Image (tube, rainbow, N blue to C red):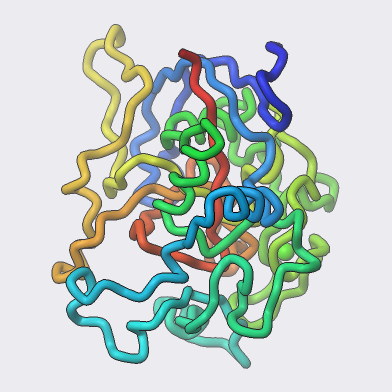
Length: 312
Ligand SMILES: [Ca+2]
């Protein structure tokens, strides 16, 4: 174990691991060998307090606080062309879970300091992960802090905590001995949240046990940005075993656009980890192999980030 160059970083000794999974969602396939060099990673997601320090020092204004550029959003409805962010709201009863608009609502005035919109605040959530940060906001924080956003391979290698091939970042059982190991969703999504793990929304960082590398919340709580462009599948293993990809940097940007929305030209990055909204009844993405595409301008109440520090 190397001594950290600053507080809040854990050393992740590099190595070769099997990235992805062949037994879950299609986008996790195929499981394939990848090598990553050693790096440092923040032990916690960046918190509201952390982000407030960045904003106080720089005057930074997040994407969710800025008016929409009509050139980027030619089809935006006028009511959506005001600054805001996507806020999760529980429904009154069961809904068609193929339509995310039942529970995601564009709320004018919602941003990291007012996560549910005007009138809400983070006074009681200083040590919760910051949310409503678009990719460029996360990247700006990282640059200010002298850090970087992780690649998907770095993120997944770190999340596995040395348990190569395990289902979860702590092992193979969702709640070993009935103990919840991450902030996820218990109950029928999105209308009943039993909060058996103690948290209905986000939890303070570090509320659950760390993984084998000393990293907290690498499953559940909030999704985390990576710096890799998304593709719907992983690359397969190379034919020759000599040629395991080293420090892969994701897919080309062209592969990341949403084929279901051809008019939208906003590329998508990979997010990892799942969130407090992921549960067995809807979305089993609280696993290290799980991944999701996210348009880079997304500001959502279940999406945050953490940073890495590479050597050299
Ligand atoms: Ca929960």
